[in-house]
Image (cartoon, rainbow, N blue to C red; front, side, top):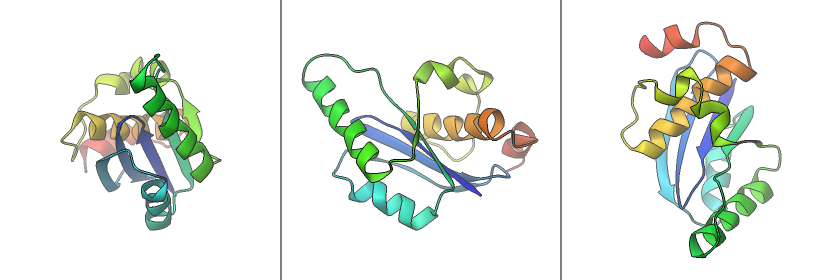
Length: 132
């Protein structure tokens, strides 16, 4: 079983992990049309997709973020959308994570681990992360 986590934004971080907390893939990209999201789903065949929906502000940035969210909703209609406060206020919000270099990658990986632990109730996620 795999979880694909998306830290949505103008720069989107992504991470794919399996149910034993092993990292299958990680990266980031500048927002493009839906092909990047479709390619991630096609490449990793996730059972669950979780997407952090950014806070929308007025202006150009808000318009870009709205397009990002709309794109994901159309390409991955079953994605679970979460508010940043849902996971960033947890232990995972500041956790050290392996293999992530940028802030967007770190956030996506932390979100994936949070989802495994809290939503899917995968046992020993924290232990497995540090053993990877």
